[in-house]
Image 1: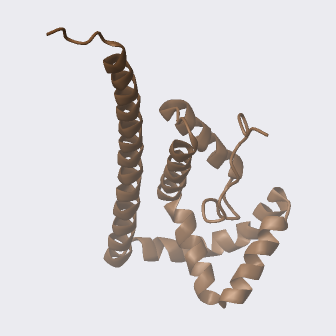
Image 2: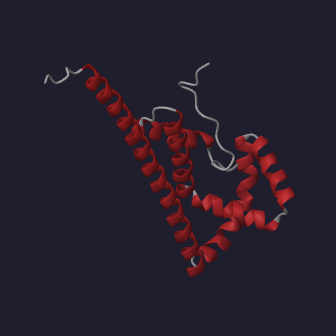
Length: 166
């Protein structure tokens, strides 16, 4: 059974309940098209890369979810996330809209603080570092593959080349 053409499962840490899984899948597909991973290891690296790029680009959503989680116990927060995930996307958006509107004014006040800016920049820097590591890992794996291909074809040539005569 092959998995060609199928989207990999989305990690629960990749897309939060109020984010659009289709947009995440589109980002992942575009990275696959751009980087053209070959083999399981390269595909996993590109999947990790998609998660980090998505989280960096949707950091505001993460901040909102974090604020909600601070007001709930871990158990209640997990239950609330499960409830939101199971909900029809349109109904979920309708239910979350009043919370988002009320939170908007408080968010403006918080976002404009130096502390928040510093924390956001630190998180963005961490995510950028993880993105860079994924790209370096991808290049490293490709380099190893090319070395093994070159050495395999090189050893075949050496075996088939004529020997020196004395």
